[in-house]
Image (tube, rainbow, N blue to C red):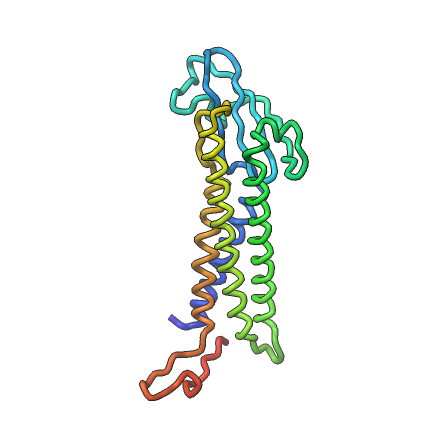
Length: 231
């Protein structure tokens, strides 16, 4: 396969990874929390949240739709939903519900690291756009190296944000004062996982593909090898 084709494939995979990461950051289905259902034919309050917002949903649980494995849910059941943004830097009602003292640092960290991931994505995208422009239609191949590094860093930041969020949910469930007894990770979390894998691997692949051509003969050095232009 020609080197130009490999780079185009890597860029396409990067675009998919960027879409996954942007979707994960702006949506609020990272995790779903469910309290214990004490009685049937009554409403219970489940919750799902992301980096910025908490949504509480009042779900009517009857004997027909009750599932012991889902507790108060599944979250897809109809019900009245109320979403409010987290107050990351000032205490309030949402902070009390979310066990403010133990969860504030986790939420701030996960949100901040996701912003770093988006910043690296933007820098990598600028380098990619710059590599496609040049005098007389000649691409600036040297910009592919920093682009690959920025996308790999974006993937690493996405992984750290995922781990911080996972630890946040774990600590919340294990708390003695919590009302939540069950949880599962939802589709926004899956998008973040996909974004991490695609951004990191494609960034590394783009970095490797942009490296100088390796010598064909043992007595050559990288400086002696013929330049490999991606045109």
